[in-house]
Image (tube, rainbow, N blue to C red):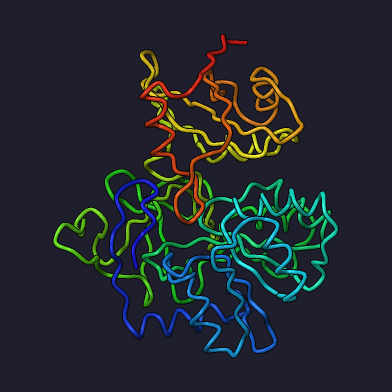
Length: 363
């Protein structure tokens, strides 16, 4: 199965029958997706993308029913499918759920069968998680994985005994690695970092359903594997109880004046604004600081907001030195074939002068 090529060219990932079988068992476990014979799983994930998250295999293994939307990935047909087919579980990337939420907020759709949805592929904005629960009674479960991991790496289910705000802090993370996966954080030279929830480094993983090789003569074996560990390219922390919190992709971290700025943190904060439908932040060259963030924003239909207002809104949740000076309002964020933000395209459009960029002076 080929990677989605979010930050580079797609790579062919090799699996084995054993790895797919063991991964399917994990998907059916309660700390995974909890898939069982009474479930109806709506898999809004293409078959060519990370084996549709392994859901078809897990459905056959557990006896669950599988609902596949084919090419009808827009909010209206998905809402109609939920009302008609009565799924109990669903899985998709955040952009799918963002569109569906906007549709559900303005249409009367029976979603009572749907208890929870799994969000993976990229970080889910906390505002989206709260909105689904508060307005539609649907629990959004954060998950993380990679095509190289078959793809399940972690699912964010809070540990026993935590409630309210403490439970939400766990749900914001990418989740806890299961028994079959080992994870560690390493520094710039590959040195292991402490799993204390504070030390930041690149996440590395290994396990029985984590691939050991790529297909093709030009596969980047040496740069992706280290002593049996897969270098994920994701940057973040690992807590003492095994929960992963990712702050960015290594290639998407904005390196400004010797400090790191998380593009994902800025995107999530922007998408918490009621007038913002989508926001994509990338690093662009800057003479003084090497790189600075460029915020590209899609405004909700019927809403209006200025760059100054969004900067002031951001200032309530992030450090002022991280606030973008460059802003562009766009019709839609370019996406890959599986619905992830395609930051390569955003950077290319900026470099080619295709974006109308407004530069704000310091407040």
